[in-house]
Image (cartoon, rainbow, N blue to C red; front, side, top):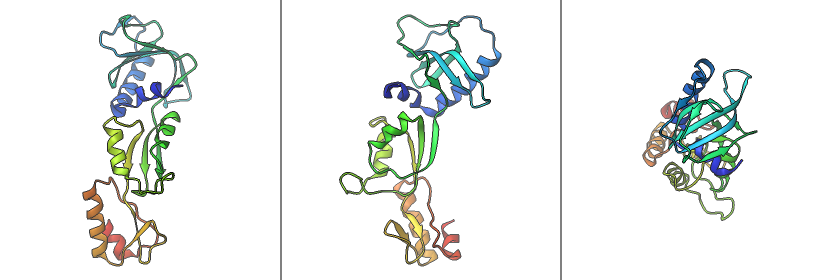
Length: 214
């Protein structure tokens, strides 16, 4: 399956997922009378849909995408779409809601494409700015996160933590050692001001510092 085909379903992921769930409900419970769809930007035909509701796989499904929203879904031949709309022959291809990898460490922008090719449309980056595996420079994960969100770079939706918060001394060079509740509160404030989405704590924290972080 091509990257372009995967990216179509990744764009606007929450709306597409909601549309897929609603369409699945209709597909399994609505009549199969032909339905005319006027607004569409792409048609996927012959899909095999994994519903995530049971072990059943729906065969021969047409999915109509309009911009970043699933506009309609039905058995092949039941959706009437203008001939001018581009079509993809998806016979043998599977369609399912995007997968989430809840623990990654982004080492280089190019690996984001690999996530998409594996069906992963959301990742949680555990550890803030890492070292670029190729150049050795520090990788600005927040900048990369913004580039993906703005559509300037292909990749999954990224949620990222800042530098892991640890006790004093820290476990290693990638953790931030905290010796007091005051240091902990300041570290949390700085990370959220930078724009990180959540806090990662390490296992060397004492109870006082851990409570201050929470």
